[in-house]
Image (cartoon, rainbow, N blue to C red):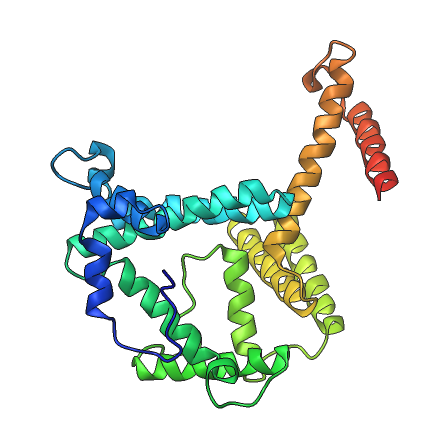
Length: 294
């Protein structure tokens, strides 16, 4: 069943909602509609009679960290290029959406069909060049139009008195910094080029060094935050996702430190039985191996 089959935004179809929540036995037998099977599994897990005690104890707040974790695991599978894992992790992420929708349905707020319809409507609304009468657009033109449409949606909801109000505070700090500055840049509040960002980066680094030398922990923390914020700006200007770049750097560190551990283990030693000079030499050897692999 294609939940987004309509080509124009509509109100939530009552018939579809009924289909989602009725005739459970036939749903369980219908292998052509595994999404129905998944929704029924979630309903059974949350059933006060015979359901899973752990699932019954959960709330939106307690499940939220798992939702975030599953999103990161999707990103990790993509980073590793493992499509088998990606399939599984997308399933785990989908289960999170079904879990939240089930809890909302129990409160009489909305169900999974409403969630699917809402994203259908949003995608149709934000792609008038595909589903409406707007002219064809380049990717850059679509990005600009997307922001205009989103601004209209925020205004229609009566939200976001500030241009930045609807950027979630719960995002990873570096990701949020990119989004904040990207939004501000759309109204002209931005450095014109990376040269000026690099100059600001050097300025913030110098200010951090002053506070470190002064031994002022509170001010050093503030300056470090400023430095990281400028780095987020630099990533945006370079069109690099800083979270992805840092994940790659983390993976590189793990790979090279593991080489140090393996090299020492071959001598029946551990890192704490070595010294910095020796481990630095091994690090450089691991670095050379990485470069040789390209």
